[in-house]
Length: 304
Image (cartoon, rainbow, N blue to C red):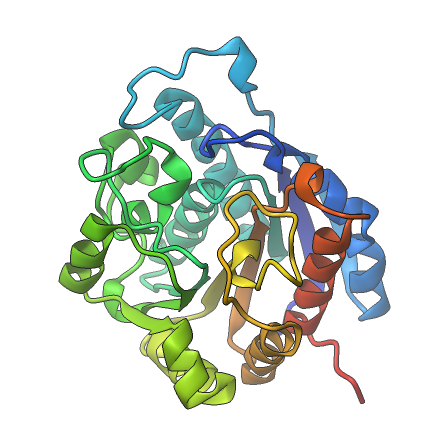
């Protein structure tokens, strides 16, 4: 990663999740000092502010298989344009969510930028869940369980067709890391799509260093950069409790940092997003503070 200009973009959206609170995630991460920490690392930081997002109380959820679909699609369209412009202006984009459906907009913007240059991106998706449901398979109708599928070309057309084409990323350059809770139909789509998956068992058996180095090789093959999408529930809830859908048995504090440090060492990171911080469920903003630490590690902060 050669860019020293960073642009922070907040997306205070919780339309895709089943409970309120992650809309306050961008504010929590700013309060935790994201700008200060990046400036300490030598970056010039511009805060774009927040994308405008409707709140659930002012809308009807619509289709129960894809709740708030028009509102989420509109927000992701807006984010797509902002992220694409960031790249064109030579900024390194850091997107702060919001629920993980925000990633549809981020990745659409990145993909569109590279596509115009006949290039493509790789994707590292850190998550306790697969996020590979579709309106036909979802048990909840919550779109934050669908964004990885959407980016790979599966799901509701208003989301899949953002930026006018699909898929946004190739399955052969996509890696899902830290997963430990998959819905039954998700398992089939993960297999059918051909996504590389490292479950928590894989991490236990192979070690984080092996997993990340292999993941970087997969995501970096024939790509011009790697996007990292972090759902904070990938970390064990004993360390990061302020998330909407905690699942026991996640990454330890040091495993999470090692992953980000190895990504920074690779020099391949081209963009970053961090999602699903829920201050309502947190204690003294600890999850947001950890999120800022992880972003700092990915951006080059080291012990020595």
